[in-house]
Image 1 (cartoon, rainbow, N blue to C red):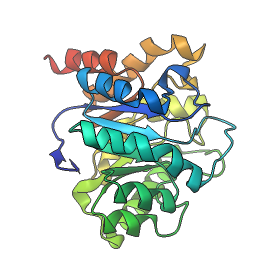
Image 2 (image 1 turned 60 degrees about the horizontal axis):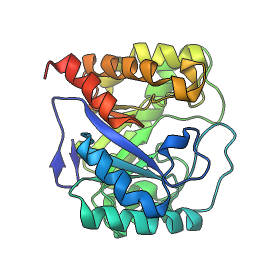
Image 3 (image 1 turned 180 degrees about the vertical axis):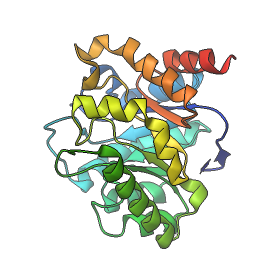
Image 4 (image 1 turned 90 degrees about the vertical axis):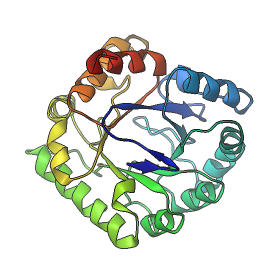
Length: 258
């Protein structure tokens, strides 16, 4: 897979979460603008291959902010990272207006939790800037019955839309959407069978870091997160999107033996 000038293959890489929000569910991932360079430097030193900037919390019952506010939160942090670090930057947004702004500023990838279905023109905008995209499964209502058919159908349709808009196939990655429109049992079913999504013909990203499916308090969910990362590595998932870079990098090394 290509993200910016970098190629990723034959390993499981870490995407570091940096949240520019006051209300993200894991407090330690929240970064104020004056600390952005410190947070980015730490992520790079600990082994992150991509930084994922989020300006809007998507935790349960979150309050949506506008694209304009997203752009305001993203502008300076994105510019500082691009100016100071040689690392691809993904931006977590489902607003086309935000995507257009950050891609014009040099962002390399859009991570869309609505899989190109929320805002008209999202796929075309990503294609225009020759950027990469992470297409995540989501739904307005909780899934019922067989989850695999619904997830695969959504992802395939969105991937086809991306190709039709002109996004290169080697710039597309799929995310099954752990924690979105799924029960705890469905989240574990998805996690344990994650490799089944490979049949769609695209690399995979897993985002399970510290999520509520693991139970208990968020600050106590690192061991379960690391187990999910080891599982992802065994299944040859290309990326894990995580809060704790160093620990997850080490977990991946355990699996690959290096």
